[in-house]
Length: 214
Image (cartoon, rainbow, N blue to C red; front, side, top):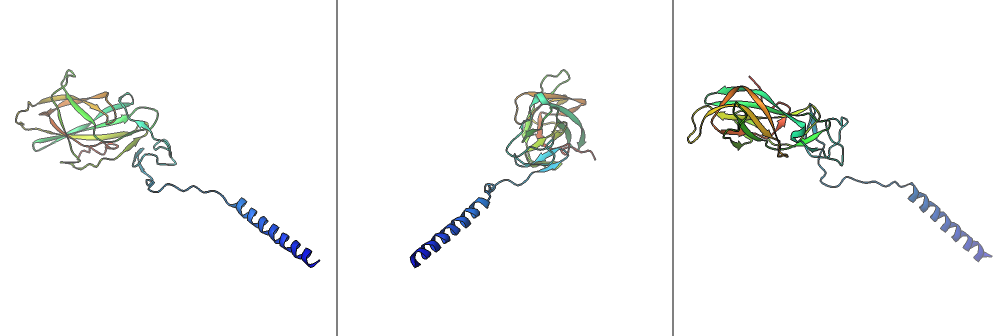
């Protein structure tokens, strides 16, 4: 009789342990942590997002959602705008902007290709010199996400004096190619810009920040 009661007690203990263990496993939720080295959230200003691709934001019209990346900004959905020019001793500065005319956000990073044009739209000899610091200051490169209607800008510095082995002339237009594209867009330069072929060019900057008049 004693052995029967002992066996019953052991069975009861085993059943209780099984029940407790089962409840504990059923109440545990699964968690997925972000992979090590995930990029920090990007920053957004005026519809332009600079930073890593795949950032999230409460304003999806200006950024991309996690796990997706906007397509490259290409000529078919870009407009080149002339921002103005100003002169200094022996040099001239010209500003331009590439505006997203599409219906979705696009991304861009780096230097645009540039080509001066004459009054008839024919190409002029142009030697772009890529820099991150010029007479106007520093211009770091950063990936930009352009929402519809938003721009990225760049500036050119040209020489106003004679350059050895160069032919100086007046450019009445500029042809530009976005960093991730091969097709071009054009803009007129009202009144023309005196140049001698060489032109420094900076990476695309947010909004129209690359060029500002005094």
